[in-house]
Image (cartoon, rainbow, N blue to C red; front, side, top):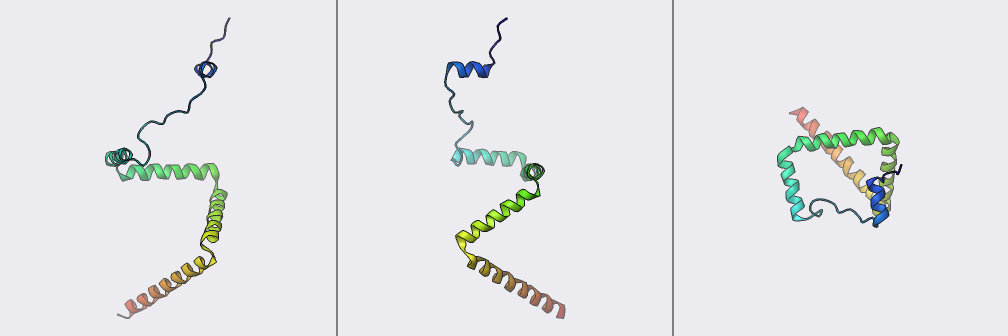
Length: 112
């Protein structure tokens, strides 16, 4: 009895595989923007929050906490390499100034 070829086997045997064309408008085009706006109007912001949280949970379950530590370390190294150590000094100084201003405002509010 002859074995039937599966559709994937038949296609590879007769013609070379062509890259599949993606459905929908080209990313970044005006038509893509209009499509995104239609989806936003149809489903609302809660939908996007829900699917974003679902994606985050999936990554957390599959990759684990070490993944986040690793990408954070790589991001910090890239920032250090591109912006330099002075960047961290500058943002640390800004954070300190902001904290002191909040303390001062809290003390003034307590006095009044």
